[in-house]
Length: 135
Image 1 (cartoon, rainbow, N blue to C red):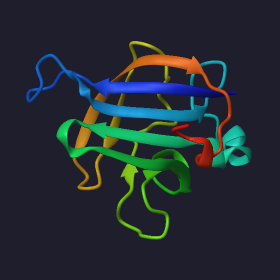
Image 2: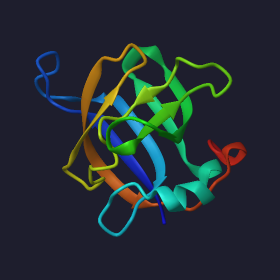
Image 3: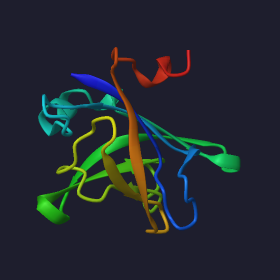
Image 4: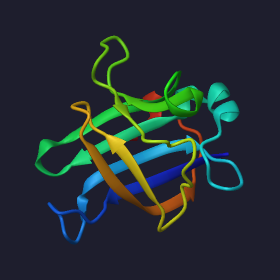
């Protein structure tokens, strides 16, 4: 089942209170325990979209991808331009983390700097193709 997950920047040295101005909105399939579901993702890739919002930098739109290799045999990533390698952001052990309110996940930006995010909401999502996003 697809879910809409919202992540906000968690507390850090740079942001002692965290910040809702930095984060992600991810549409992804989750299993009953709140883990990313690779099998369902394979059949619903077109629906697995990501919106990155980063204060004054504006938004970036991307897709959630699953690639072989990495810890645990595979890596979940956010790819902003599938025709250009090097702009991906990797999740840190996302296959092990629960996407449930109050949980934390780490995502590395395209400069490989890790940021920790707090899951602030998880809601059931209706499948929407990329051309329907934003309408």
